[in-house]
Image 1 (cartoon, one colour):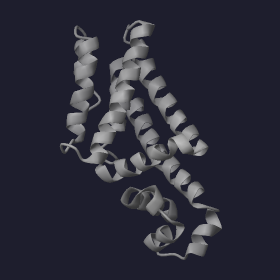
Image 2: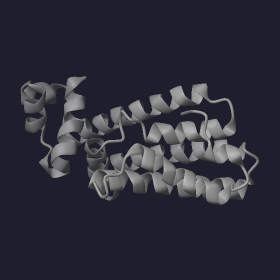
Image 3: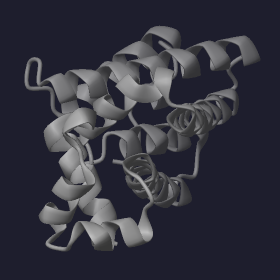
Image 4: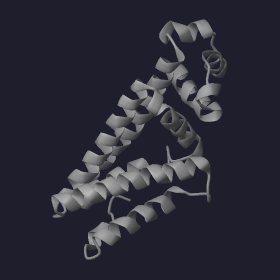
Amino acid sequence: MAVVTAAFEVLSSHGMQGTTLQRVAEHTGVSKASVLHYFSNKQNLIETALRRANTMLRLEAVAFLNLAETPWERFYAVVEANFSPTTFHAEVAHGWIAMCAEVPHNPQFQRLQTAIYRRLNTNLYSALKDTGASETEAKSVAHTVSLLIDRLWLRCGLQIGGLNREEAIVQIEGVVGLHFPDDTDASSPKTR
C-alpha cells in the first residue's frame, strides 16, 4: 500500500514529530481523509509501516536461509539479510532510529522491537549452536552479534564514517573470528 511506504519515507525524512498524517497524505498524493480511512491515527500508520519494513527484511532472511546448507551459511544468511543492499541505507536507518527513540514510551513499538530482537537472536543462536559451539558460547556470540548489528545500523543512520554493508559484514566477521578462530567456515561464508 502506497500510504504505508510513504509513512516510512516521511518518518525517515522528518522523524517521529515531523511525521503527520497530512504530510504522509501529501507525500502519497492523496487526501488526509483517505489516509484516515485506513488508519485511525499516526501511531497505527507508523506501526504498520515499521511492520512492513521488518517483513521485507524477514522475507529476505528466509530467502537466504532457504539457500543455506550448513550452520555457518545459516548464520551468515541472517547477517546478510540484516545488511542487505536493498535496506542497509542511511534513509532506512533514519526510520528505524526514529522508531527506536519511541520504544521506551510506546507499548506497540516495544512489542514490535521485542519480537524483532527475539527472532534475530533465535536465528543467530540456532545456527551457532549447530556449529558445535556450546550453548553458553552460542548464546553469548548471538547476543554480541545482535548488539553489533544494532550498533552498525545506528552508525549507518547517523552517517558516521560512511559505513557501507561490506564494512559492516567485516565487523561481524571480526567478532565471530575472535570466538571461533580455528573454524575456517566462520570467516568464509558461502552465502555471498
